[in-house]
Length: 269
Length: 239
View 1 (cartoon, chains in turn brown, orange):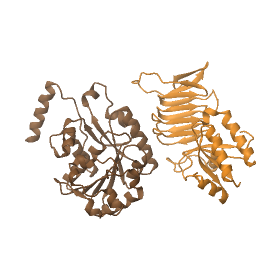
View 2: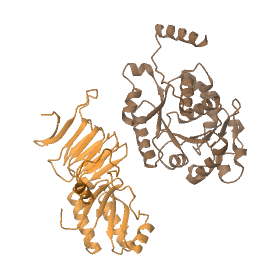
View 3: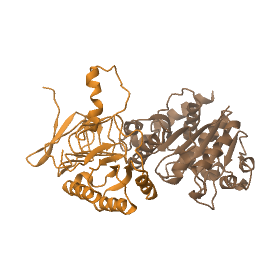
View 4: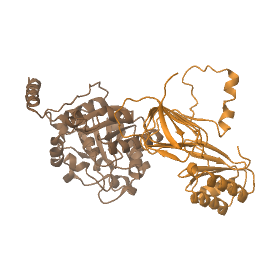
């Protein structure tokens, strides 16, 4: 079976592309899928850090492309999930070291033995972005519920349509339900109103993501993390399952805490 | 239609300007007159020049590029019939042919065609008339622009960061939230209408207006026009 190549991109930087790639990769591997996470952000590699695999890197994607090692040698097996592989970016080179044709060939070599290839794109709309979408069968856009991130995402949707890689699907990351309820943050419907593309996930703001990212232990491994559950649901939707979208409410108050306690007990039983 | 032989059309990629059969320097002089006459319309445009069978040298092509650059216009294509001209254009890094999808109007009908066969056969002729309307059946996203000397109809949304510049009217069957300029060649009678008129900036001829700040309101179809030297928007009501 041939792998689906999915590029994860955003336009604006810092919205959570790498965190999303790592967590969706982990979640797909938890479903038993054979996944390769490919870091295409050459020169600013950090997917390996988020996955906690930095200390295992010997070769990187540029080494493969320039023939210094075989593809198999550069693939790093995850320490927790045997189905998950990482192909790290090079830290010493820049975007010009990898051309679109190189990445297309690389992905074609990966396709036969895997189910998913997730490409973590560079931010922006320049060369790094264009290279990252070249091999894609599908594109997922990550945005935050902020006007500037949505504006950039809209630009990227247009570019992906022009490159005939569309229609892209959308992940709204770092939603703060409390702010939305007070009308101080864009709601998912406001974002969809402008972008008019299919939604594949809503990830709430969750401190556990920051902590787990710093520890190299993606939140998707944590069954109690709200963001982790959201990432697992995204993986199931990518896998073709029909999973209803989560609704988030602010549970900061006393009643919220009580409600949450009850719900957690409910899940255990 | 002016008698200098210059034909201007809008397309997905930018403006297509067909030059008349005059000698090159005369053709460029006519082009310069056009650029100078309606600077608002051309400012920031991307242009492909269609030069026909004439043979151009590198100096000729550079002259065209520099002339356009002086008017803040980017030359992206130089389309000629002669292989020598094509070679020169390629050397200078211009596109030498038009993309296949150069017309906005998609070829597939969305419903059963109801017009008579004779009406359909006149359709290509309408395309060649630069004053005819341009129909875009898609959403214009941030960074995308449509520019056409006639009127422009968009069936879809115009998102913030997108831009429409028309010599005539602009009709948006959807939400208009980008920048729109109607009557960009100086026509004050031009109008802008949309199902939800919330442009970042709205211009008609030389007049400029911004949308009022109150964002949360019920969208209603509106029409904007120039009245007594000011742009006014009125809600559209069926009489």
